[in-house]
Image 1 (cartoon, rainbow, N blue to C red):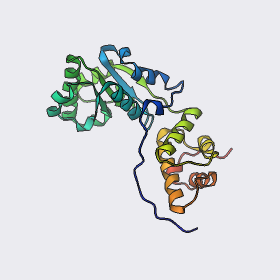
Image 2: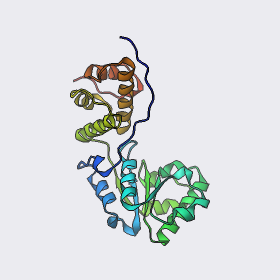
Image 3: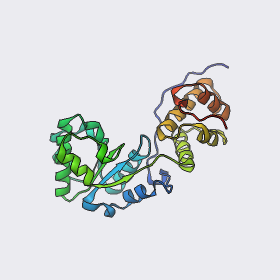
Length: 233
């Protein structure tokens, strides 16, 4: 089979509210983002595993509220007055557990945002009690905030996530590909993202449709994308 040049073009993620698949497992988190009136003291901590949809829901809330979005490790004290002038979402707070300067900036941002009557969302992978922030006042405030979590996916949610990831890349797999993957892949959103990326690259490179046979070859190949794949039934 002749090989075709492939170009590593970025997939454009669809991050609108209608693009977020609501299941019984993530319904509470989606409802909290949709209705900030549920947030005591105008604070929300949103957690979940990598690829669970935290960034998606952050963008949904930002579109609804006009909030700005910033990565925790990008925070500096100089940015605080401007960022505190409206609602703000701070992503990946556990990433600054070893960064005292960024923690100090987030602490001041937290206090100033609330003092000015705006809302604050913070995200991270684990529960706030596991963030290990070295600034005690910041750690205690994170733990005191209203907390909702996004769980690992069930079959329906995993299938929806795969379908969205393929759609973001404008790729249409054969109808039996997604059910095949759901029954055999590692049950995580991160694995779904890796598998979709690998299958897209394989299909482009080999100039062939994205079929169940291609998926089977990926999962059987021992590549990182297929690690944790379940045995054939």
